[in-house]
Length: 157
Image (cartoon, rainbow, N blue to C red):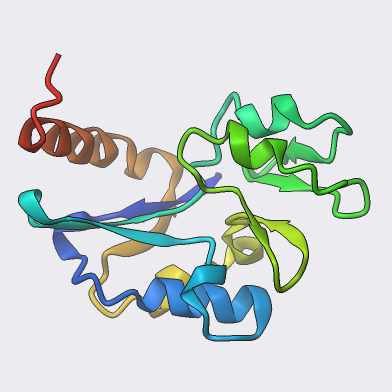
């Protein structure tokens, strides 16, 4: 069974440990700017939400890649063949969540790859806001968080 990162914003303290751990795992340096996780604070809603690649079913980044470097693996993770990537950055432009980025340190594209099945952000989250759970565990939670944010910011349809 595929697993996904599940976010529980009500538990997030905004400590950004996930960003620090991710950047270290990806680059060997404690630099949140190089993390594949970004904590977004919604002050009016009193929420902090760690955002990372949503591993989209119909991933726009995969569709736009001109050289076929990105693909959706059997485990549900959008991954890439680094040797094929020409670093054109079209994938970053196509990502609706902004979770594909260029790293000036590695001079490569970067995104959440779930640390090969052992996501460090979830393992080190001190408040339990991040967990690695079966695929269906987070769907209702994502919908609830989105509805809360929409309501607070007056984005109701």
